[in-house]
Length: 438
Image (cartoon, rainbow, N blue to C red; front, side):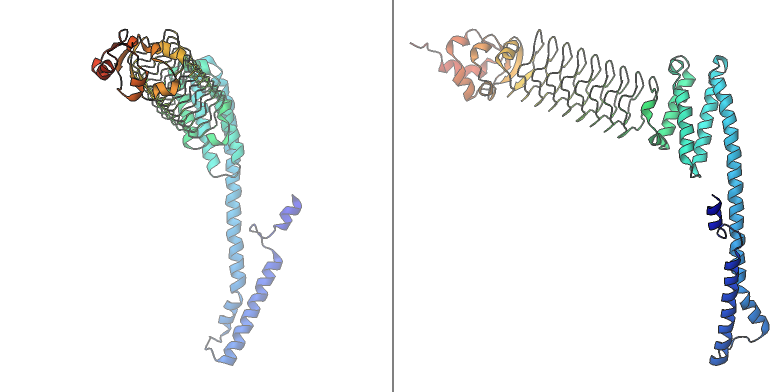
């Protein structure tokens, strides 16, 4: 350290003799040069001694002025550092007192507000100092203490408000990016409208927190605990939620477009009119989930468990439900156009007025379908599945397309047993098969 200070001697406001001597030499050379130029070239410069003395002292004077200004800067810097050290010392004393209050039941709330004030002080110090990492460490330490009191957030409303506001402060000032939020328990907080876009929050605890209208787009939330969290109108598009716990969560009208949710737990979740189009929900648990009116078009629900789920009026256009469990699920008036229902487990599944247009099913699934009044377009349906009209002979079809596929597969001895709401669609069929084969 001593060698380093000697090396920089003269650049920190202290007069360095060699530099000063050099400035005098430069001044002498300048005076001599001006004198001879004035003599030879008749420049008309003032030849008085006063002028040459002034010129002789110009460079050294400038050098001395620079040294003086640097010295002032160094003095101000040293003074600022001294004041900063005094401030840090005071903050450390306040910290000790605040922590003592925080862990005292009677003075708990006062201690919490004192700690919050300390966070503000450390933030202000970090704005104009190079030693930011130290200040961020202190902020993280205080934040950890405040957020460790999870039970108090449930019983003391003011403390919940304070704890929530601190998280917003960390996000708004982009300080949260400096440390790992996953180290903190963020359960039971009011974080409505917060911006966690692209944050790595895997395995974080958001249990029972209010995240409605929050931006969690592209966030990494695999393994996160979001059970009973409020996520209505939240943006979770392209978020990674594999193996996340969303049981009992409220996700009404949430945007889960292209969200990744394999093996996620969404049992008893409220997904009313949510957007789950093109999402991945393979092996997801959706038992007792409410998906009324949700958009599940092109969604991968293969091997998912949708037992007792409410799927009325949902859009399952081109959805993959292969090997999914739909036992006791309600799919009334659901749109299953071009969906893949191969090897789906259906027991006591409700399919009233569901739409099957070019839907891929196997014979076991078709047996279940045949028990309900459904909207069925046979064009492509029969050809794609290779099924026979015998499986449909007890069906109640709300609508049926009078196409070539239908005429080719229909047989006269089935007609008497089939019950069609729109009989006019069978007019040509009756005419074609009105006479028994001999």
